[in-house]
Image 1 (cartoon, rainbow, N blue to C red):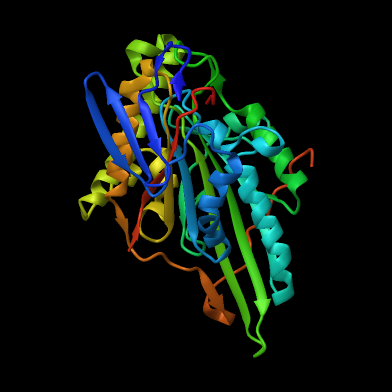
Image 2: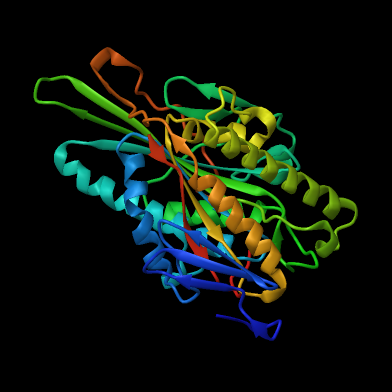
Length: 362
């Protein structure tokens, strides 16, 4: 890949077969090993195929999180949301896969309830992206633990039942419309917040013995705001405040991974709204996967190196054995919380993806 805007050599070299990325900054070259590395010409379909089994785990009753991490403009939102048709990202592809698999599981006697939500973390505040922004801003939303389902509940958060790809598309369009996006010197359309799109999956079936079996899984698809160096972002006023909040929460995420890698007894999940919300899948109860997006522009080589070093930290983390949320008969509550109507209608924590396409915008 070449950094065309800069007119120079791309600082990132990817070896997809060996899962290796080389990052050159100045005279030094740094090598990083991944579960999988994707070049700039990788199709969206190929990325999804690599994480499909992980998405399946949510249907199997686990708490699962997929996070896209990297500097602003590196391609996180393209990877997670994408565009139309073949350019669809991980969120629409994952939800389409789940909807299709749920239909197949009906043959084995399973019936499912799927509930979607989308929350924005902006300046360390929570906003519901599936309701009008003025109403969402007025809410005093709080994060609360749910003993039953292995997820963190957000008070007053809109939950919407989905049963078709069209339902999902409407919700994603609504969330994108309400998301906070502004321009900076580093990205003319920069996401100024973290977005967590979550699907809760409640499955039920009756066994031949007459016992009722219930499972609960969750899939959190996280498009993180991009990190920015203050001296390069040109941020002032509100943009400066946003950048500082973004960098602070990403630092808190790094602190959590550091504590996990060092097997510390206390993990600082509550130091930010982001880590608090993702606690179930990062605490050893669930499964988490981190995708690293890096820029192919040589002017961003130092930022790309920082992202790759973050991936090294993540790869050192080992979570405990994940918990499968499955009950039989009276072993626990399996009923779904009510959905709200919305108009219009020891497991390694891995960092598998490198994206060198500088054209992919966040």
